[in-house]
Image 1 (tube, one colour):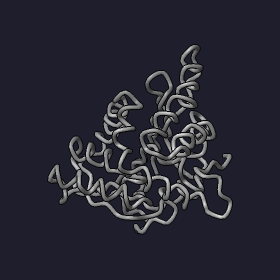
Image 2: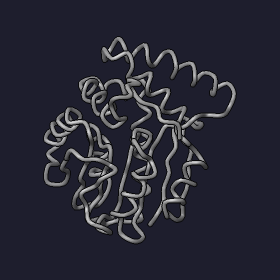
Image 3: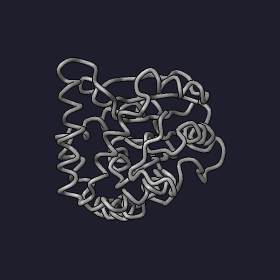
Image 4: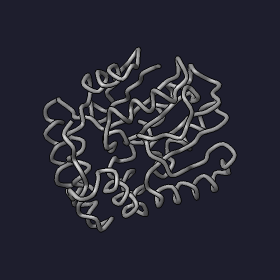
Length: 243
């Protein structure tokens, strides 16, 4: 997988650049997510959460790259789970997420913490499920991140990944590329004041090994029963795998 970074600065790691970028755009992140996806991102999360239904009740779900906790909040609403711990490398995103959790009075179920997907604090085979929404392509080392997830999951536990993918149907493919490459960065630039953040979104989606390529990465790290479900004509995909 080709490494794509937000600011193309060789002296700073991808992890550092991604953290800096999300801290910078955190105040605008939720609005832009929903606006630029026309609100469809909410339905993508709901569909992903349905994958957990057959595993209820759950003691512990770890939501990696939790951001402002949208997926964690939706999961707590729809799944019988005792505890959700959201992990992210951007403190500003977590601060916003905590306010949303407090507003929903879900502090006893959801907690957020600063953490690294490639160096999780959880013990081996201690987690009932791991979710990652739009975060895997931001991992500095995708294989290492997936290996860490595999390590902390209990045998038979489920990994769910939601990630942007590349539609292959004409004319959606062409419209999608134009929107992601030109319209989205323009709106993101004038709204978030970071001209590079939403250009990085386009570039990182292009570099991400989507579809069958990603399920092969999961299988390489030991995951079984790996599935790939394209959504909205291939704009987004849900991936699952069990330990």
